[in-house]
Amino acid sequence: MKLSDFNYELPAELIAQAPLVPRDTSRLLVVDRATSGIQDKHFFNILDLIPAGDVLVLNNTKVFSARILGKKKKTGGKVDLLLLEAYRAPSLNPDSEYVSAAEAEEIRNKKIWRCLAQPALHENQEIIFEGDTLEAVFLKRDTDGIPLIEFKNTDDVMATARKIGTMPLPPYIKREASGQDDATYQTVYAQKEGAVAAPTAGLHFTEELLKKLRDKGVQVCFVTLHVGYGTFKPVEDLENHKMHSEVFELSKETADCLNQAKSKGRKVWAVGTTTLRVLETCVQEKKLVAGQGETDLYIRDPFEFEAVDRLITNFHLPKTTLLLLVSAFMGESLRKKAYEHAVHEKYRFYSYGDAMVIL
Image (tube, rainbow, N blue to C red; front, side, top):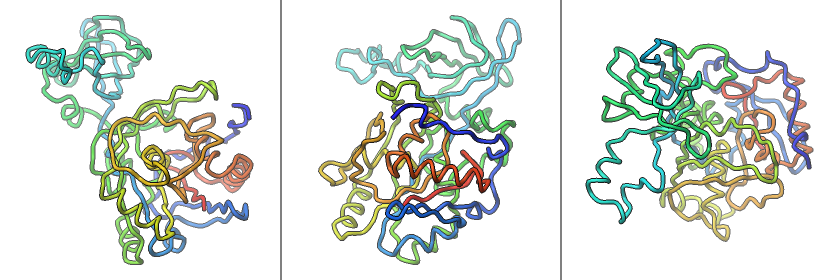
């Protein structure tokens, strides 16, 4: 299998630039792995596909306003920052037994974030933001080449971003984020803030649809995985790709729910590749074990899926880890058949696009 196998041609007009309203009116491609059959439906038809007793697992991460605009302090030139995550180098771990209390406090007080920056900055370059009340300085690049930015005049960078930032829409959405995106680029069940990209398969669910599923007898559980910008990073080397690490949590309540369901032969439906990665990270001998931490699980064919039986997902960018994961789950020949059908039938692609369920 070659990297070129995970490339495909997509007309630009099929890249969704805005969501459909209501959310669950998007299209749904139903793919049956047992028969290789394909059906065209709408997302609200998911109610008819999930049997009572099965478990639907959702990622309750919440996207924060990670994109903030500033200007260079000296020249006034525009600076566009995307906050990725707070930076903690191993040598600067404030919880380390080798760090004194005074040093730990200094580390905590330094608001250093890994960020993407446009245009490129030079070391010690100062940036100011809205109202000149927030300042920052570019320190250096980390070992992955990501800029490290230290923020001044704020006790909480994420809280400040909520006030002055905007939704970090993916680069293939060719417009500026609007106030409407604050709601639409967020699942209706988002709770735990920390993602810089939405778990897009979940964007199709409405509160009404979830209620109907529960009323039918479908169990609904939650995990958390804070989606990072690395989700869009193209794969350049199938064998040696370095997967981006993302923070996750699987509660004991969810683990117990899933283990009980599987012991009774009921199916686990993962909503999105992020949910699937959490579950497959936490499975041991076909049992889910509660835990939290970071996962860099890289899934590609061949891979033995032990936790997840069904997958609801969007249509993904070529040569990405998301597409490799989907191919591993459904088989590459069937994945190609499904994507060719979706392009031919003019499905809407990517974050605000349509969905696929793999049975």
